[in-house]
Image (cartoon, rainbow, N blue to C red):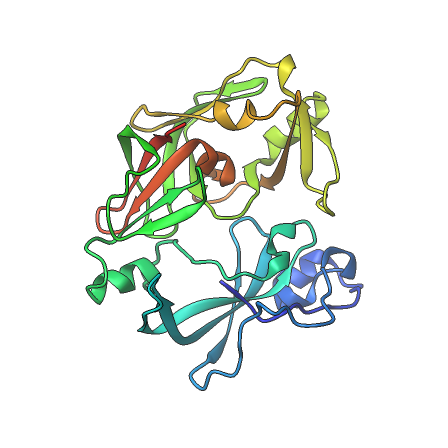
Length: 308
């Protein structure tokens, strides 16, 4: 995911429903919801490439935090020893609009897409096809320093055992859930979750509304982010977990119990009813607690606790 800079549009007087049906998504955002950059970021994507081909296909991030167009360009990978090599012409997602409340994008740093897709191969799969790595796997390690280990079964800073679950479908990294416990709510209803790279959590709209109405979550604007909520962790049992279809419990206590303050702040988006029965978008909250390994050939996701 790369940045071309940011576009800015004036207020629109047409309805949101009209926009969804007839307009490009880039034209339907009020200026209050879009951050304007008068000058291009130094880290923005270099458009001088002779091979760059921008398509007319729009995309939207799973967390609704960014929008843009797909493009194609030759991509080079530079190793730690400064050796660089091409992985060929590769699909990239150019960010045209970034909503105000995702302030983590302000640096304009490129992001590596790790999602699965039957239509194209990502960086990990291309490196494997070229023989640059021995396996089409990537391990996401949050502690002590966030990093991606591509091409082998990386175990540093990760504590065995690794717990494996099947990834559903052929897009994104989706897992089946048989229940959850979160704050005042507990359920054994079956649902699905998608792993995402944004720093925002997605939960069912009905549950978010219930937490707000019960005064469990209180809105709190932070860093221009209007989707932040805060709760007092001392008022609730220290149980925050999801149970996968195969019975593995994803325990998120390490994230919610971290820090000295009794107040916990988290950015949350509401997830509406959808055909895939996806209720949850799991992001940095999960990576803070677990090493996560993605295997593109076995279509599996593995979790292991961080070494403290």
